[in-house]
Amino acid sequence: MPFKFDKKNTAYILFIIVLSLIVSNLVVKKFFLKVPEKQIITSLSPADIDKKFYELLKNFGIDNKLIRRKESKGKDSRHQFTYTVTVPSDLPIPVILDDVYSEFSNAGIDILSVEKEIGKKSIIKFSSNSKLILSADFKYSENVKRKKGRVGFVISQFTVDTSQDSLFFDIPEAFCILLQPSKYNSKAAGFVSRKNKEYAVLINDTGDELDFKLKGDYSEQRIKNIIRTIVGSFSAAVYFIIDDESDFFDSPGYKIVLAELVKRKIKTMMLSSIMNLSSEELTGVSASFKNIIDNLTASDEKIILVTRDVFAALLPSIAFFRKSGIKFVNPSAIRIK
Image (cartoon, rainbow, N blue to C red):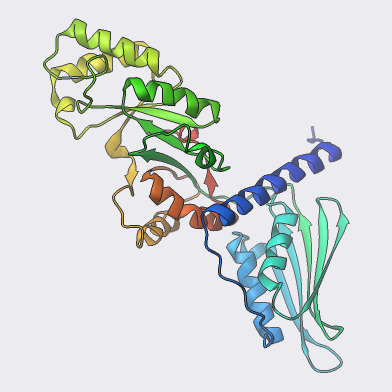
């Protein structure tokens, strides 16, 4: 039985996706990026425009087989380029057009786009002195989808200041805060949840508050009481992340903790299973992140550990790689293997 799409609902959903992406882009640019002023470029040849346009399509992760390109010469012997682009279902056409206008806005050429069918078909034309240089037909396909991996972020070494961090938590990006059990962080956890973000709990023996402090040589009953307190104070935690490089991990006490977490059906994860960029220098972290992304396969799912500063430094890269189809999701959506 064929699947039927409600055109009104489809158009509405596409509008919401586009609006979310535009808001995300504006927040990143306003608060985290120092964007240099664009200079007017007046020397782009038709070949330059063609090359730049093709690279823009590839940056969105559109497969070569979905791009048909034809080169011809007009009456004045100038080169003209014609594209027919099949747009994957997870990539709204307006998002591509927005990027086109942004990239070519200062190129000294005229750009005209017309939506031939809402959310389904659009055409864009580049011209100079009323002479056509490039035209592209975009056709949305419900049967094509970009196959890319998924990435989630866990932010460590983060002391949540509810009076100062409101703006950071309003960033329309998915991330999870890693909290060390403490009375202060039990209150911070509520703030994180109210901001519709995730948090996880770190299990090791570095805490210094008696109600939350774990030690390998504590009695079984004492450890059970502490776990009961931690679980009750951080009831919305998406994971309990075990520091498997701590002394506590090799102690008898850890086995008791694990049994208590399993009994409560709490999801656990080893800290060493998370890709760690938290100690990276800010000047080199983008290159390290790019290396991770470049090695992602369509079925790969990765969780990356970062600091707040590293995450902020990666926001431009996240925006760039999202265009190619990489999904940045909450860590709770990542399947642990």
